[in-house]
Image (cartoon, rainbow, N blue to C red; front, top):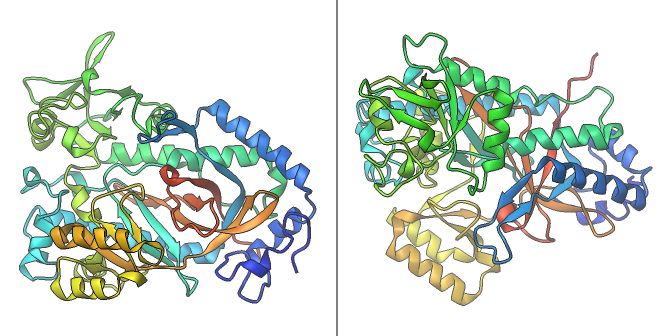
Amino acid sequence: MLEGELLDGYAANAPDDEMVDAQGALRPDYRELAETLGGWSLEEYEQRKTRADLALLSAGITFNVYSDEEGTERIFPFSLIPRIVGAEEWKGVDAGLKQRLRALNLFLSDLYGERRILKEKVVPEEIVLSSPGYRPEMEGFEPPLGVYAHVAGCDLVRDESGEFVVLEDNLRTPSGVSYVLENRTVMLRVVPDLFPRWGVQAVTDYPNQLLATLLSVGPEGSDGPRAVLLTPGIYNSAYFEHSFLSQQMGIPLVEGTDLTVGDDDCVYLRSTTGLEQVDVVYRRIDDDFLDPLVYRADSLLGVPGLMRAYLAGNVTLANAPGAGVADDKVVYRWVPEIIRFYLNEDPILQNVETFSALIPSERDYIKAHARELVLKPANESGGYGVLIGEQATEEELGATLAQMEAEPRNWIAQPLLHFSTIPTFDEDRLKPRRADLRPFVLSGEETWVIPGGLTRVALREGSYVVNSSQGGGSKDTWVLNEEPD
Protein backbone atom coordinates (compact mmCIF):
# COMPACT_ATOMS: atom_id res chain seq x y z
CA MET A 1 0.00 0.00 0.00
CA LEU A 2 1.42 3.37 -1.05
CA GLU A 3 0.77 6.23 1.33
CA GLY A 4 1.51 9.94 1.24
CA GLU A 5 0.69 13.03 -0.77
CA LEU A 6 3.32 12.41 -3.46
CA LEU A 7 2.33 8.75 -4.00
CA ASP A 8 -1.43 9.16 -4.07
CA GLY A 9 -2.99 7.14 -6.91
CA TYR A 10 0.35 5.97 -8.32
CA ALA A 11 -0.25 2.22 -8.27
CA ALA A 12 -3.54 2.47 -10.17
CA ASN A 13 -1.83 3.81 -13.31
CA ALA A 14 1.44 1.85 -13.51
CA PRO A 15 1.03 -1.53 -15.27
CA ASP A 16 4.67 -1.69 -16.49
CA ASP A 17 6.33 -0.13 -13.48
CA GLU A 18 9.58 -0.79 -11.63
CA MET A 19 8.34 0.49 -8.24
CA VAL A 20 5.03 -1.41 -8.12
CA ASP A 21 3.98 -4.70 -9.69
CA ALA A 22 0.91 -5.33 -11.87
CA GLN A 23 -1.25 -5.78 -8.75
CA GLY A 24 -0.09 -2.44 -7.35
CA ALA A 25 2.11 -3.98 -4.64
CA LEU A 26 5.36 -2.25 -3.78
CA ARG A 27 8.48 -4.03 -5.06
CA PRO A 28 11.09 -4.82 -2.34
CA ASP A 29 13.92 -2.68 -3.77
CA TYR A 30 11.74 0.45 -3.58
CA ARG A 31 10.37 -0.15 -0.07
CA GLU A 32 12.69 2.20 1.83
CA LEU A 33 12.35 4.93 -0.78
CA ALA A 34 8.54 4.76 -0.72
CA GLU A 35 8.47 4.89 3.07
CA THR A 36 10.56 8.06 3.09
CA LEU A 37 8.62 9.72 0.28
CA GLY A 38 5.38 8.88 2.07
CA GLY A 39 6.35 11.39 4.74
CA TRP A 40 7.06 14.21 2.28
CA SER A 41 4.59 16.96 1.48
CA LEU A 42 4.32 18.55 -1.95
CA GLU A 43 5.85 21.70 -0.51
CA GLU A 44 8.89 19.83 0.80
CA TYR A 45 9.44 18.11 -2.55
CA GLU A 46 9.27 21.44 -4.41
CA GLN A 47 11.75 23.05 -2.03
CA ARG A 48 14.24 20.25 -2.53
CA LYS A 49 13.73 20.24 -6.28
CA THR A 50 14.47 23.97 -6.38
CA ARG A 51 17.69 23.39 -4.44
CA ALA A 52 18.69 20.62 -6.86
CA ASP A 53 18.02 22.80 -9.92
CA LEU A 54 20.09 25.62 -8.46
CA ALA A 55 22.95 23.22 -7.78
CA LEU A 56 22.89 21.98 -11.37
CA LEU A 57 22.66 25.54 -12.69
CA SER A 58 25.66 26.65 -10.64
CA ALA A 59 27.62 23.64 -11.95
CA GLY A 60 26.87 24.72 -15.53
CA ILE A 61 25.30 21.41 -16.52
CA THR A 62 23.81 22.25 -19.90
CA PHE A 63 23.36 20.75 -23.33
CA ASN A 64 22.77 22.25 -26.77
CA VAL A 65 19.78 21.77 -29.07
CA TYR A 66 20.90 22.91 -32.49
CA SER A 67 17.36 23.10 -33.91
CA ASP A 68 16.00 25.26 -31.10
CA GLU A 69 15.07 28.67 -32.51
CA GLU A 70 15.01 30.29 -29.07
CA GLY A 71 18.65 29.53 -28.33
CA THR A 72 20.68 26.38 -28.14
CA GLU A 73 21.78 26.10 -24.52
CA ARG A 74 19.50 24.47 -21.95
CA ILE A 75 19.75 23.17 -18.42
CA PHE A 76 19.33 19.41 -18.53
CA PRO A 77 15.98 18.57 -16.86
CA PHE A 78 16.59 16.58 -13.68
CA SER A 79 14.13 14.31 -11.87
CA LEU A 80 14.80 14.16 -8.14
CA ILE A 81 13.31 10.68 -7.59
CA PRO A 82 15.99 7.99 -8.26
CA ARG A 83 15.75 4.82 -10.26
CA ILE A 84 16.67 1.71 -8.24
CA VAL A 85 18.24 -1.57 -9.41
CA GLY A 86 18.84 -4.46 -7.02
CA ALA A 87 22.36 -5.76 -6.37
CA GLU A 88 21.70 -9.28 -7.64
CA GLU A 89 20.04 -8.11 -10.85
CA TRP A 90 22.93 -5.76 -11.54
CA LYS A 91 25.43 -8.63 -11.43
CA GLY A 92 23.74 -10.08 -14.53
CA VAL A 93 23.70 -6.72 -16.30
CA ASP A 94 27.38 -6.16 -15.50
CA ALA A 95 28.33 -9.61 -16.83
CA GLY A 96 26.20 -9.14 -19.95
CA LEU A 97 27.76 -5.81 -20.83
CA LYS A 98 31.29 -7.11 -20.37
CA GLN A 99 30.47 -10.09 -22.58
CA ARG A 100 28.98 -7.82 -25.25
CA LEU A 101 31.97 -5.47 -25.40
CA ARG A 102 34.47 -8.34 -25.53
CA ALA A 103 32.62 -9.74 -28.52
CA LEU A 104 32.25 -6.38 -30.29
CA ASN A 105 35.96 -5.61 -29.91
CA LEU A 106 36.81 -9.05 -31.31
CA PHE A 107 34.40 -8.40 -34.17
CA LEU A 108 36.13 -5.11 -35.03
CA SER A 109 39.58 -6.68 -34.79
CA ASP A 110 38.49 -9.49 -37.13
CA LEU A 111 36.64 -7.18 -39.51
CA TYR A 112 39.73 -5.07 -40.15
CA GLY A 113 41.93 -8.17 -40.16
CA GLU A 114 41.17 -11.71 -41.33
CA ARG A 115 37.37 -11.23 -41.74
CA ARG A 116 36.58 -14.74 -40.58
CA ILE A 117 33.06 -13.73 -39.66
CA LEU A 118 32.37 -12.50 -43.19
CA LYS A 119 34.01 -15.48 -44.86
CA GLU A 120 31.86 -17.83 -42.80
CA LYS A 121 28.79 -15.73 -43.67
CA VAL A 122 27.74 -15.23 -40.06
CA VAL A 123 27.08 -11.56 -40.83
CA PRO A 124 26.25 -10.49 -44.42
CA GLU A 125 29.29 -8.86 -45.98
CA GLU A 126 27.28 -6.25 -47.90
CA ILE A 127 25.71 -4.96 -44.69
CA VAL A 128 29.02 -4.53 -42.88
CA LEU A 129 31.07 -3.06 -45.71
CA SER A 130 28.31 -0.62 -46.67
CA SER A 131 28.11 0.79 -43.16
CA PRO A 132 28.96 4.52 -42.92
CA GLY A 133 31.05 3.62 -39.88
CA TYR A 134 33.33 1.29 -41.83
CA ARG A 135 36.79 2.87 -42.38
CA PRO A 136 38.97 1.17 -45.03
CA GLU A 137 42.01 3.01 -43.65
CA MET A 138 41.91 0.68 -40.64
CA GLU A 139 42.31 -2.51 -42.69
CA GLY A 140 45.32 -4.49 -41.49
CA PHE A 141 45.85 -2.29 -38.43
CA GLU A 142 45.61 -3.66 -34.91
CA PRO A 143 45.34 -1.11 -32.05
CA PRO A 144 47.02 -1.78 -28.69
CA LEU A 145 45.50 -4.78 -26.89
CA GLY A 146 43.14 -5.22 -29.84
CA VAL A 147 40.71 -2.73 -28.30
CA TYR A 148 38.73 -0.50 -30.65
CA ALA A 149 35.90 0.63 -28.37
CA HIS A 150 37.54 1.86 -25.18
CA VAL A 151 34.44 3.77 -24.04
CA ALA A 152 30.98 2.39 -24.82
CA GLY A 153 27.48 3.39 -23.82
CA CYS A 154 24.89 0.63 -24.24
CA ASP A 155 21.25 1.72 -24.07
CA LEU A 156 19.07 -0.71 -22.10
CA VAL A 157 15.34 -0.91 -21.50
CA ARG A 158 13.35 -3.23 -19.29
CA ASP A 159 10.90 -5.15 -21.49
CA GLU A 160 7.43 -6.52 -20.75
CA SER A 161 8.93 -9.62 -19.11
CA GLY A 162 10.81 -7.42 -16.63
CA GLU A 163 14.27 -8.18 -18.05
CA PHE A 164 16.81 -5.61 -19.21
CA VAL A 165 17.49 -5.87 -22.97
CA VAL A 166 19.90 -3.92 -25.17
CA LEU A 167 18.21 -1.35 -27.39
CA GLU A 168 21.37 -0.09 -29.10
CA ASP A 169 25.13 0.23 -28.72
CA ASN A 170 27.17 3.45 -28.84
CA LEU A 171 30.83 2.85 -29.63
CA ARG A 172 31.99 6.11 -31.21
CA THR A 173 31.84 9.10 -28.83
CA PRO A 174 29.12 8.19 -26.30
CA SER A 175 28.14 11.02 -23.98
CA GLY A 176 26.22 11.47 -20.75
CA VAL A 177 28.51 10.19 -18.01
CA SER A 178 29.05 13.70 -16.60
CA TYR A 179 25.34 13.82 -15.78
CA VAL A 180 25.69 10.50 -13.94
CA LEU A 181 28.40 11.94 -11.71
CA GLU A 182 26.81 15.34 -11.15
CA ASN A 183 23.36 13.86 -10.50
CA ARG A 184 24.83 11.73 -7.70
CA THR A 185 26.59 14.77 -6.21
CA VAL A 186 23.35 16.74 -6.18
CA MET A 187 21.37 13.86 -4.66
CA LEU A 188 23.87 13.48 -1.81
CA ARG A 189 23.68 17.21 -1.14
CA VAL A 190 19.93 17.75 -1.44
CA VAL A 191 18.22 14.46 -0.44
CA PRO A 192 20.70 12.48 1.69
CA ASP A 193 17.76 11.09 3.70
CA LEU A 194 16.44 9.26 0.61
CA PHE A 195 19.46 6.94 0.42
CA PRO A 196 18.77 3.42 1.75
CA ARG A 197 20.19 2.02 4.95
CA TRP A 198 22.89 -0.12 3.29
CA GLY A 199 23.77 2.54 0.71
CA VAL A 200 24.23 2.39 -3.05
CA GLN A 201 27.22 1.51 -5.19
CA ALA A 202 29.47 4.49 -5.88
CA VAL A 203 29.92 6.01 -9.33
CA THR A 204 32.56 8.60 -8.45
CA ASP A 205 35.46 6.35 -9.46
CA TYR A 206 34.58 6.69 -13.16
CA PRO A 207 37.20 9.40 -14.00
CA ASN A 208 39.96 7.34 -12.35
CA GLN A 209 38.83 4.21 -14.17
CA LEU A 210 38.67 6.11 -17.48
CA LEU A 211 42.17 7.52 -17.04
CA ALA A 212 43.55 4.08 -16.13
CA THR A 213 41.88 2.64 -19.23
CA LEU A 214 43.37 5.32 -21.49
CA LEU A 215 46.87 4.92 -20.08
CA SER A 216 46.68 1.13 -20.34
CA VAL A 217 46.31 1.33 -24.13
CA GLY A 218 49.22 3.67 -24.79
CA PRO A 219 51.53 2.81 -27.71
CA GLU A 220 53.95 -0.02 -27.13
CA GLY A 221 57.12 1.28 -25.54
CA SER A 222 55.63 4.56 -24.31
CA ASP A 223 57.14 5.40 -20.93
CA GLY A 224 54.58 6.98 -18.62
CA PRO A 225 52.08 7.70 -21.43
CA ARG A 226 50.46 11.13 -21.58
CA ALA A 227 46.79 11.53 -22.50
CA VAL A 228 44.74 14.48 -23.70
CA LEU A 229 41.02 14.96 -24.39
CA LEU A 230 40.31 16.31 -27.87
CA THR A 231 37.13 18.39 -28.11
CA PRO A 232 35.46 20.09 -31.09
CA GLY A 233 35.15 23.21 -28.92
CA ILE A 234 32.71 25.21 -26.84
CA TYR A 235 29.83 24.99 -29.32
CA ASN A 236 29.62 21.21 -29.17
CA SER A 237 26.53 19.85 -27.40
CA ALA A 238 28.66 17.86 -24.94
CA TYR A 239 31.34 20.47 -24.27
CA PHE A 240 30.45 20.62 -20.57
CA GLU A 241 31.22 16.91 -20.34
CA HIS A 242 34.53 17.27 -22.18
CA SER A 243 35.64 20.01 -19.79
CA PHE A 244 34.36 18.14 -16.75
CA LEU A 245 36.11 14.85 -17.59
CA SER A 246 39.43 16.46 -18.49
CA GLN A 247 39.39 18.32 -15.19
CA GLN A 248 38.46 15.22 -13.20
CA MET A 249 41.19 13.14 -14.88
CA GLY A 250 43.78 15.91 -14.65
CA ILE A 251 44.61 15.82 -18.37
CA PRO A 252 44.68 18.70 -20.86
CA LEU A 253 41.51 19.63 -22.74
CA VAL A 254 42.66 20.44 -26.26
CA GLU A 255 41.28 21.47 -29.63
CA GLY A 256 42.74 20.44 -32.96
CA THR A 257 44.92 23.54 -33.24
CA ASP A 258 46.62 22.67 -29.94
CA LEU A 259 48.11 19.50 -31.46
CA THR A 260 50.57 19.00 -34.27
CA VAL A 261 52.17 15.98 -35.96
CA GLY A 262 55.93 16.13 -36.38
CA ASP A 263 58.17 14.81 -39.12
CA ASP A 264 58.72 11.76 -36.91
CA ASP A 265 54.98 10.92 -37.15
CA CYS A 266 54.47 11.60 -33.47
CA VAL A 267 51.76 13.83 -31.98
CA TYR A 268 52.77 16.85 -29.93
CA LEU A 269 50.92 19.29 -27.69
CA ARG A 270 51.82 22.94 -28.14
CA SER A 271 52.50 24.22 -24.64
CA THR A 272 54.03 27.32 -23.10
CA THR A 273 57.26 25.39 -22.63
CA GLY A 274 57.42 23.96 -26.14
CA LEU A 275 56.23 20.76 -27.79
CA GLU A 276 55.27 17.87 -25.51
CA GLN A 277 54.63 14.39 -26.91
CA VAL A 278 51.13 12.94 -26.58
CA ASP A 279 50.61 9.18 -26.40
CA VAL A 280 46.82 8.82 -26.07
CA VAL A 281 44.09 11.02 -27.52
CA TYR A 282 40.63 10.55 -26.00
CA ARG A 283 38.83 12.05 -28.92
CA ARG A 284 35.31 13.43 -28.74
CA ILE A 285 35.33 14.31 -32.44
CA ASP A 286 33.59 12.20 -35.06
CA ASP A 287 35.72 10.20 -37.51
CA ASP A 288 34.90 12.52 -40.41
CA PHE A 289 36.55 15.49 -38.70
CA LEU A 290 39.62 13.80 -37.16
CA ASP A 291 42.16 14.41 -39.90
CA PRO A 292 41.56 16.65 -42.94
CA LEU A 293 44.28 14.79 -44.85
CA VAL A 294 42.30 11.53 -44.68
CA TYR A 295 38.66 12.39 -44.08
CA ARG A 296 36.84 15.69 -44.64
CA ALA A 297 39.29 18.13 -46.16
CA ASP A 298 37.28 21.09 -44.88
CA SER A 299 37.53 20.03 -41.23
CA LEU A 300 38.96 22.69 -38.95
CA LEU A 301 38.42 20.56 -35.85
CA GLY A 302 40.94 17.78 -36.36
CA VAL A 303 44.70 17.44 -36.64
CA PRO A 304 46.42 17.12 -40.04
CA GLY A 305 48.52 13.95 -40.03
CA LEU A 306 46.81 12.43 -36.95
CA MET A 307 45.85 9.25 -38.79
CA ARG A 308 49.39 8.89 -40.14
CA ALA A 309 50.74 9.01 -36.58
CA TYR A 310 48.06 6.59 -35.41
CA LEU A 311 48.65 4.01 -38.13
CA ALA A 312 52.40 4.28 -37.47
CA GLY A 313 51.70 3.13 -33.91
CA ASN A 314 52.94 6.34 -32.28
CA VAL A 315 49.67 7.44 -30.68
CA THR A 316 46.47 5.69 -29.55
CA LEU A 317 43.05 7.08 -30.45
CA ALA A 318 40.19 6.26 -28.12
CA ASN A 319 37.82 5.27 -29.50
CA ALA A 320 39.48 3.89 -32.63
CA PRO A 321 38.35 5.20 -36.03
CA GLY A 322 36.03 2.67 -37.61
CA ALA A 323 34.52 1.48 -34.32
CA GLY A 324 31.20 2.91 -35.49
CA VAL A 325 30.57 -0.04 -37.80
CA ALA A 326 29.82 -2.12 -34.70
CA ASP A 327 27.14 0.26 -33.41
CA ASP A 328 25.39 0.57 -36.75
CA LYS A 329 21.71 -0.13 -36.03
CA VAL A 330 21.62 -2.66 -38.88
CA VAL A 331 24.71 -4.52 -37.66
CA TYR A 332 23.06 -4.54 -34.21
CA ARG A 333 20.63 -7.12 -35.52
CA TRP A 334 23.50 -9.65 -35.71
CA VAL A 335 25.16 -8.97 -32.33
CA PRO A 336 23.79 -12.19 -30.75
CA GLU A 337 25.39 -14.14 -33.60
CA ILE A 338 28.60 -12.13 -33.13
CA ILE A 339 28.72 -13.10 -29.45
CA ARG A 340 28.19 -16.78 -30.24
CA PHE A 341 30.79 -16.73 -33.03
CA TYR A 342 33.66 -15.20 -31.04
CA LEU A 343 32.92 -16.34 -27.49
CA ASN A 344 30.99 -19.58 -28.07
CA GLU A 345 28.48 -18.32 -25.49
CA ASP A 346 24.83 -17.38 -25.57
CA PRO A 347 24.16 -13.68 -24.98
CA ILE A 348 23.51 -12.81 -21.36
CA LEU A 349 21.67 -9.64 -22.38
CA GLN A 350 19.22 -10.08 -25.26
CA ASN A 351 18.63 -7.80 -28.25
CA VAL A 352 15.26 -6.35 -29.11
CA GLU A 353 13.82 -8.24 -32.10
CA THR A 354 14.99 -6.32 -35.17
CA PHE A 355 14.11 -6.41 -38.87
CA SER A 356 16.45 -5.10 -41.56
CA ALA A 357 14.85 -3.48 -44.60
CA LEU A 358 17.83 -4.61 -46.69
CA ILE A 359 16.65 -8.23 -46.42
CA PRO A 360 13.68 -8.62 -48.81
CA SER A 361 11.61 -10.92 -46.57
CA GLU A 362 12.11 -8.64 -43.58
CA ARG A 363 11.29 -5.55 -45.64
CA ASP A 364 8.02 -7.18 -46.66
CA TYR A 365 7.28 -7.88 -43.01
CA ILE A 366 7.94 -4.25 -42.08
CA LYS A 367 5.53 -3.01 -44.73
CA ALA A 368 2.83 -5.46 -43.69
CA HIS A 369 3.15 -4.71 -39.96
CA ALA A 370 4.26 -1.06 -39.95
CA ARG A 371 1.53 -0.02 -37.49
CA GLU A 372 2.93 -2.45 -34.90
CA LEU A 373 6.56 -1.41 -35.33
CA VAL A 374 8.97 1.41 -34.61
CA LEU A 375 10.85 2.42 -37.78
CA LYS A 376 14.35 3.81 -37.24
CA PRO A 377 16.92 5.32 -39.61
CA ALA A 378 20.08 3.30 -39.12
CA ASN A 379 22.55 6.13 -38.66
CA GLU A 380 20.70 8.89 -36.84
CA SER A 381 20.94 9.66 -33.13
CA GLY A 382 19.06 11.64 -30.53
CA GLY A 383 15.72 10.12 -31.47
CA TYR A 384 15.57 12.00 -34.77
CA GLY A 385 13.78 10.33 -37.65
CA VAL A 386 12.18 7.63 -35.48
CA LEU A 387 8.57 6.82 -36.37
CA ILE A 388 6.26 4.98 -33.96
CA GLY A 389 3.82 3.21 -36.26
CA GLU A 390 0.78 3.22 -33.98
CA GLN A 391 1.11 6.97 -33.34
CA ALA A 392 1.86 8.07 -36.93
CA THR A 393 -0.57 9.64 -39.38
CA GLU A 394 -1.17 7.92 -42.72
CA GLU A 395 0.88 10.63 -44.41
CA GLU A 396 3.82 10.22 -42.01
CA LEU A 397 3.76 6.45 -42.31
CA GLY A 398 3.57 6.55 -46.10
CA ALA A 399 6.47 9.01 -46.33
CA THR A 400 8.67 6.90 -44.05
CA LEU A 401 7.92 3.66 -45.92
CA ALA A 402 8.77 5.44 -49.18
CA GLN A 403 12.13 6.48 -47.71
CA MET A 404 12.69 2.89 -46.63
CA GLU A 405 11.98 1.60 -50.15
CA ALA A 406 14.40 4.14 -51.61
CA GLU A 407 17.17 3.46 -49.07
CA PRO A 408 16.60 0.01 -47.53
CA ARG A 409 20.13 -0.14 -46.12
CA ASN A 410 19.30 2.84 -43.93
CA TRP A 411 16.25 1.42 -42.13
CA ILE A 412 15.42 -1.08 -39.42
CA ALA A 413 12.21 -1.78 -37.54
CA GLN A 414 11.48 -3.14 -34.08
CA PRO A 415 8.30 -3.99 -32.20
CA LEU A 416 6.99 -1.16 -30.05
CA LEU A 417 8.24 -2.11 -26.61
CA HIS A 418 6.08 -1.02 -23.73
CA PHE A 419 9.25 -0.65 -21.74
CA SER A 420 9.11 0.01 -18.04
CA THR A 421 8.08 3.14 -16.22
CA ILE A 422 9.62 4.62 -13.09
CA PRO A 423 8.26 7.17 -10.60
CA THR A 424 8.71 10.72 -11.89
CA PHE A 425 7.27 13.95 -10.52
CA ASP A 426 4.72 15.65 -12.76
CA GLU A 427 2.63 18.66 -11.69
CA ASP A 428 1.55 17.66 -8.17
CA ARG A 429 2.67 14.08 -7.48
CA LEU A 430 4.66 11.10 -8.75
CA LYS A 431 3.51 9.48 -11.98
CA PRO A 432 4.90 6.56 -14.04
CA ARG A 433 7.04 7.63 -17.00
CA ARG A 434 9.01 5.53 -19.53
CA ALA A 435 12.78 5.36 -19.05
CA ASP A 436 15.89 3.79 -20.49
CA LEU A 437 19.34 3.27 -18.99
CA ARG A 438 22.79 3.94 -20.46
CA PRO A 439 25.59 2.23 -18.51
CA PHE A 440 29.14 3.05 -19.58
CA VAL A 441 31.68 0.31 -20.24
CA LEU A 442 35.44 0.89 -20.24
CA SER A 443 37.71 -1.57 -22.10
CA GLY A 444 41.50 -1.63 -21.78
CA GLU A 445 43.66 -4.11 -19.90
CA GLU A 446 40.44 -4.87 -18.01
CA THR A 447 36.74 -4.23 -18.64
CA TRP A 448 34.85 -2.13 -16.11
CA VAL A 449 31.17 -1.14 -15.98
CA ILE A 450 29.93 1.86 -14.02
CA PRO A 451 27.34 0.62 -11.50
CA GLY A 452 24.14 2.11 -12.87
CA GLY A 453 24.59 4.77 -15.48
CA LEU A 454 22.45 7.49 -17.02
CA THR A 455 18.71 6.98 -16.65
CA ARG A 456 16.86 9.05 -19.22
CA VAL A 457 13.15 9.54 -18.65
CA ALA A 458 10.30 10.75 -20.83
CA LEU A 459 8.75 13.70 -19.02
CA ARG A 460 5.53 13.76 -21.04
CA GLU A 461 2.66 11.39 -20.39
CA GLY A 462 2.50 8.58 -22.93
CA SER A 463 5.86 9.44 -24.51
CA TYR A 464 8.39 6.76 -25.43
CA VAL A 465 11.12 9.27 -26.40
CA VAL A 466 13.63 9.87 -23.61
CA ASN A 467 16.38 11.79 -25.46
CA SER A 468 17.27 15.16 -23.95
CA SER A 469 17.00 16.78 -27.37
CA GLN A 470 13.40 15.53 -27.57
CA GLY A 471 12.24 16.74 -24.16
CA GLY A 472 13.52 13.98 -21.88
CA GLY A 473 15.19 14.35 -18.51
CA SER A 474 17.67 12.45 -16.36
CA LYS A 475 17.71 10.66 -13.02
CA ASP A 476 20.26 9.30 -10.61
CA THR A 477 20.48 5.50 -10.89
CA TRP A 478 20.99 3.58 -7.67
CA VAL A 479 22.46 0.10 -7.75
CA LEU A 480 21.87 -1.14 -4.23
CA ASN A 481 24.62 -2.57 -2.11
CA GLU A 482 24.08 -6.12 -0.97
CA GLU A 483 22.57 -6.27 2.48
CA PRO A 484 24.67 -8.17 5.02
CA ASP A 485 23.32 -11.53 6.13
